[in-house]
Amino acid sequence: MIIIVACSDSPRAKVEKESTPAQPVTVPAADIDSATRNVVSFLRGETPFERIAVADSVILQVTPEGGGAKATLRREQLRNPSSWMIPSGTTTYSLVPPPGLTLLSTRIGRHFNCLQFPLSSRVPELAHYPHVGVKLEPSPGGNCLQTWNATFVFDSVARPPRLIAVVYDQWEW
Image (tube, rainbow, N blue to C red):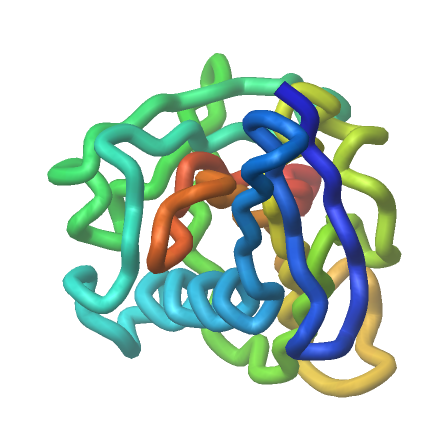
C-alpha cells in the first residue's frame, strides 16, 4: 500500500491513496477540512453527533512527549463529548476544548503543537493517513500556553471522510 499526501490551502488540493497504480482514490482537501471543523464543533457542544462521521472505533492518543497514552473508543462511546478522554496513569486528558478559545486554525497534512510540524515527527504510524491539524487560541497572537492543539486523522477512502484517530498535543496544560 502506498499513500501520497499533498498539502495545500487550495480547496482543489487532494489527498491521494493508491491501492494499485491504476486505481487511485482521492479525498478532497475541502472535505477533510470540513469534517475536521464539524468534529471540533461537536466537541464544543455546537453540533450533534449525527453530523460527524466516525469509524466503528476511534483511537485517541496523546503525543509521545506527553506519554503516548492511547484509548480506543467505540462509536457509541463517542456520542458524548465528555467521553473523549485519554487515561494516562493518574491523569486523564479530555479532548474537549476549553471555552473561550475562539480563533480556529486548521492545516491539512500538518500537526500543531503551537507551531506546525509534520505528523510523522510525532506519530509516524498515522502520518500516511489524511489528517488536519487544529489549533484553537483565545485571540490572534495569543500565548502558546493558551492554545488547544489536536490532529484529526481520517480513513483514506471513506466518503464522507470518516474519523479514525485524534492525536492530542496540549497535554502539558
